[in-house]
Length: 140
Image (cartoon, rainbow, N blue to C red; front, side):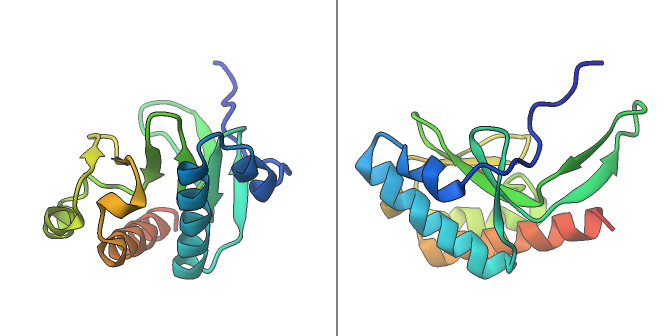
């Protein structure tokens, strides 16, 4: 089985974010860095080369013998959009998602936002909090 590339590293989160090409995406990324840190109380850590993660848990796949560590929540400033790993598809989040603003979501739990000005940041904070608490319980 191939080894997972998305692991915690000692790379600097700030250095990574400062290399984001789009100035608007860079500004939004630093706002997210502060928001995630404030909500989770966790230190930001680079996971692989492109994901800023907060907290971690150890899981074992039910379908195999694969065991990994993974971040509880996080984000990545991708070229196409800001990708937030916040369990967006969780049924408890539907009401909040209806109030969020302009976004796309995947069934796998990612939330895609073009820019923070497209969404209600207070609602986004609640989604991050719900996801963080949900994932924390899963990791116990």
